[in-house]
Length: 87
Figure 1 (cartoon, rainbow, N blue to C red):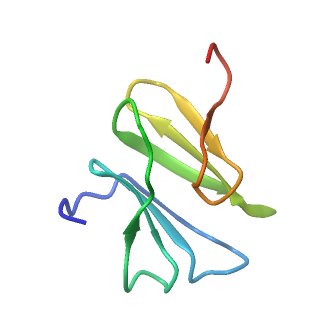
Figure 2 (cartoon, rainbow, N blue to C red; figure 1 turned 45 degrees about the vertical axis):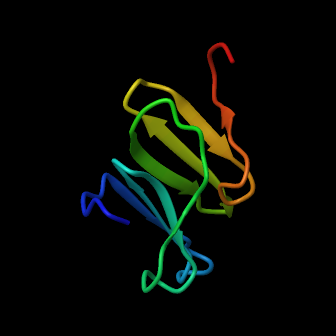
């Protein structure tokens, strides 16, 4: 993760070692509480600014991009779909 700027961070309340991070370089995931990070492959249209997860189903992630696009993933960031508006 080359850019040290963090726009948002989300911690899984059920499995706290699962941590998600949004930065100018994209989305990242840690499965060991932040010791090691991996990029979440996405085709983002702009910088991710906000990131949260569903506290009752933490494999569901939401991200808001700088261009106003909102995305949802129901599989911990493997696949993403646009939320609301036109596809």
